[in-house]
Length: 305
Image (cartoon, rainbow, N blue to C red; front, side, top):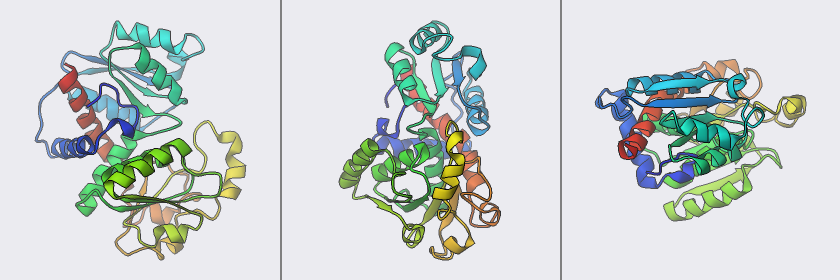
């Protein structure tokens, strides 16, 4: 496995499956080794977080390490000091960087300037750690990783990573979105290349019903991500027909389960009755952030050490 984990593209199919297998073992208490013993990991957060911060801090503690949380005001990344200078200083003191940033280019610049591992805890292009947790719960609920995954809404960072992972594992990824809100074009081309090798499929539709009609899992995310607040009202109008609600679920197979990376804007992209309903597995996803991040750190530092 590569030193840095910036994208789902940093994984081979075998590595992705191995990582999920290790995460399951962590969840069942079958792994007790602590490859982070005596190591310090810097957590750089340009955006606030509940799940990402808590799960990474606990994962690092559980693996024997010590996390150092650096809030937005602590560094003012790229303002008080350049990304390059921050990263090169941190390299002298810590054993790894987990960064939750606005621009993916920030992660690339960090990784280019240090020899310690850099992990993408979220960027404007991808949210790969969330996708690992998503596919762990997919495996737990369906017993397989090759599934039909329908994404309803904005082709954002979460959609990008899910699309790549689905293609990597040979599944079908269908996104229903308004015109102009598709996933990243370059990543879509790479996803289709992966899908051609794994016998998967990448499909873009406009009607959410077309996306969910043969779905095993139905995924949605907020219509307005952090940093896009000025577009909120415009996006509410554009995405008004892309809500995951009881009516849409009635068009899906009975076994289809509902996913959301959280936090949710209740009453916008998803209704309360669906988010809290018996087909929702959002809390299982959230729990699995801990186990997949342990597996990721375990794999990286087992070889990096």
